[in-house]
Amino acid sequence: MKNLRVLLVCGSGASSGFMAANIRKAAKEKGIGMDVQARSDSEIDNYIEDVDLIMVGPHLEYVMDDLEEYTHEYPVKIALMKPDYYSRLDGTKAIEHILSLYE
Image (cartoon, rainbow, N blue to C red):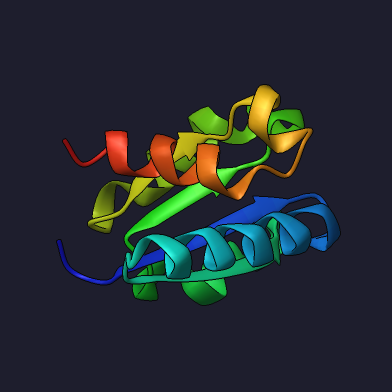
C-alpha cells in the first residue's frame, strides 16, 4: 500500500490533533506509511487535493452528506471516525478502521 495521506477533521482541530499524533505513533510502530494531519472542518478546502482520506470526528456527523457531495470531483475517501476509538484517542483502532477502508 502506498503512503496514505489522511486528514482528520474536527470542529477546531484540537481533539483531532491529539488523535493524529496517536495515529502517527501507532503507524510508525506498525511500519505503516501514513501522513496524518489534523485541521478544522473550515480548512478542508485547503487540503482536499493533497489527501487520500478525510476522517471526520463523530461529533461532526452532520457534515458528512455535504462532504460527500463536495468531494465527488476529487479522488478522496470520506469516513466518520468511530466514537469508541475517538473518545479514547486510540490510534491503533483508528488505523484498523483506516486500513479496513482500503481492503
